[in-house]
Length: 159
Image 1 (cartoon, rainbow, N blue to C red):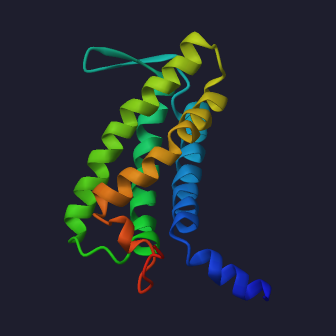
Image 2: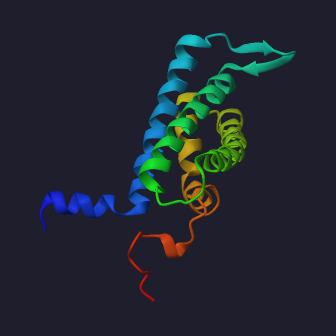
């Protein structure tokens, strides 16, 4: 099998495509987090609507949703393109899952930074990676409403 054929076979695998999609969203998220944390939000805390917010929480909040937007677009067109749901429903579901993911990530991030005293630039990717696999299944079955039978378009699942 040639390298090109092997590459095409890999790209036919939905899990591999999801990993690539999530990887791009992850790169956008982590890059934006680093940029915001080091260059934009340089004070330790900020007062927003009478709340005191740490710089890493503010950086995380913005970078997370930039990553989510990137991930949605790539996932919709590259991973789960066979979904029959209208795009607005997919986006609503994807963002609903992302909001849950946001709080899960924020909780893990706080745990890593406050309790384990990790550097925020190490804690952020560690938090994201710790929740990656749950994300695949939630998006597959909820955001894009695909059952296990739709795993590979046009090919029946061997039983």
